[in-house]
Length: 103
Image (cartoon, rainbow, N blue to C red):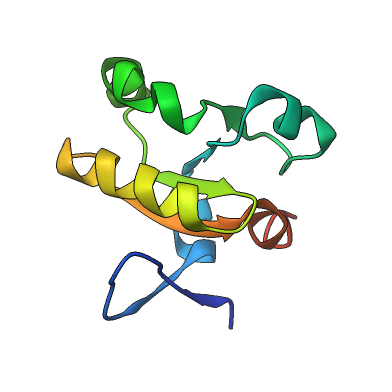
């Protein structure tokens, strides 16, 4: 049914489909060269090393966030950073995983 276990110590599962239905923003936290090699349709590229500097802009979007990267490690860190700033965020894992949910 499209459930994906969260990284970073989560005890539950969350549906990427549910977040996409809530019009979530997909943020790919890989480097710009990695992003341009391939990415989920409609995703925004905000590399992990600058995501903390972009919190106010992300909050202005006023949408839940799905983070993704190459393996799920960086996106797990990004989701944690965003959650600690009060942003509704989940780790979507690898960008190909997130892309598979986009219709």
